[in-house]
Length: 282
Image (cartoon, rainbow, N blue to C red; front, top):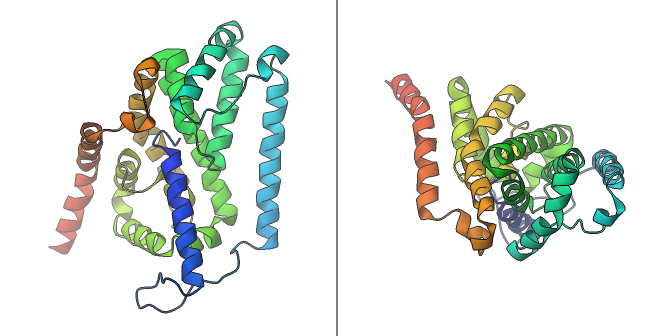
């Protein structure tokens, strides 16, 4: 989910940035400020790093498979990740009775799927957040979404800490340098800045999850900013799940008014860091 912000948008940006990086490596573009130093053509991860990623992925996949196998056979074949609002409506109808009859098994399967998708940056967590609202209501749905989004983001954080530096530096060199500079300027009020980034769509959640350990953001700051910062957007998504029949597209979730409110909340949080910088310059 994203977090609850659309992970599909994040992945689209990742793909576009990846294509731009490949173009720069071939001489069709450039990412350096001076127009020099093209990126290497080869994939940035070494064999050892790829082996680590494969091992972690297989471990998570095996755990997810074992959890799925505990579900009743009649329902197992109905599990399908939704890609559209129509798919989500069908999935909600299929799972409504199952969620009532086997609440513990359903929640375990739901949480495992959400965390898996968030950890490995698989698009679709926005639909999982809507499903939580449709099946569990606002309070329980919000708790589930924030819990899973935070757990998945934390897993992604530690995975990036292991092998993410060369990949992020290869995909987003300019964005990473900008992020590192902003973090360096706001070390004393780092939680405020991270909350601002989580609440507003200034940077994709995907990039924040991957880049945070690389720019030395402490995990406790990352964790708190994720738990608190995802609440507003998660509440919007979960509430929209209650009226799933009226929702036509994911784009309807975040209109201009909603984005304005999120930015206003983010500005209120980041104001202390702006005053701190002003006093420093004086």
